[in-house]
Structure formats: C-alpha cells, structure tokens
Figure 1: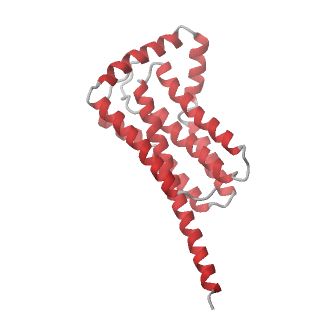
Figure 2 (figure 1 turned 60 degrees about the vertical axis):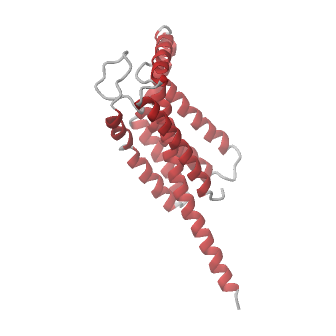
Length: 222
C-alpha cells in the first residue's frame, strides 16, 4: 500500500473534529443531552426485556476492554514485526500504550454522570470501551491492510474489524452504562487516534522511499 500520510492525517483531523463537536454539545447541555437520555432508555429497555439480546451484548462488551484489547494490540504489533516493519511496529506499540491515558483524562475534564441504570462512581464521557476498541481493533485493521496488501480479502477483514468496533460501541448504551453520544465520541476519537499514528508511520515510509530514490538518482549521475 502506497504511503498516504496526508490522507490519514486528514481522516484523523476529521474524526477528531467530530469528537470536538460532540464534546461542545454535551458540555453546553444542548438538545443532544435530552435526545441521549431518551435513546439510552429505549435501547436499555429493549435489551433488558430480551435476555438473549442482553447476554449477547454482555459478551460483546467484554471484548472491548482489558485483556482482549491487549491481545488484539499485540497481534497487530506482531504482524508488523513479522514483516520487519520495525518503525511501524514501534509506532503501533507507542500508540496502543499511550491510548490507555486518554479517556481517564477526558472523563475527569467533562465529569458527565452515567445513565441512571447504573450506580458507578466514574464518569461517562467519552466511553473508554468505544475509544479503546476503535483505537485497538482499528489499528489491527490498518495493520492487516499493510501486511497483507497483495491480497484483496484484506479489505473484508478490515471491514469486519471496523464493524466490530460499531458493535462494541452499541453494546454500551444497550446495557445502559453509556449514553449514545459517549460511544460516538469514543469511536470518533479512537479512530482519529489510530489514523494519526498511521499518518506518522506513512510519513516515515514516504520519507524513506524518497530518500532511496534520491540516492539511486545520484548513483546514475555521471
């Protein structure tokens, strides 16, 4: 896959800008807050009335935090190492390790209370599950696109991973532990996080390719 640092930087900025819009709407107590309350109530009640649906989303949400994310992140880094993409593997590792610091910091800033269905002391905005899943599964999807670039099926695998991010995000309001805007903010910020680090790795690859081409041109000069 040809390096496209500007493309991924644009995607990162677009996703982060959407997060910023959501943050302003939530912080200002706009119409979104009331809509959030009605929607999370509807989703929670739907799942609560259907034990099979509730159990399914418990299973999904358990794969969106903790050890499962470490396994997914390690898989992404391992794929890159196996292809000897050393700098990209280092970038992925740094991104995944520092991602754990993002949502605790933001939750402390926004201090949004959880939905009334849970009595948890921590805050709600943005969703850590949504952010962690978007960053980790998203970076695995990007690693798959890079490592298996001769194969067309890599896009199907990446699409499945991105779809899984949406499912993890949906599980949080279905279980009544997050408002919909919490998970949307988490997903957009997590994707923006992954795209930023992808842009950094692509910038390095593009710089290396151009440097190699320049050296070849120099050797051809009489």
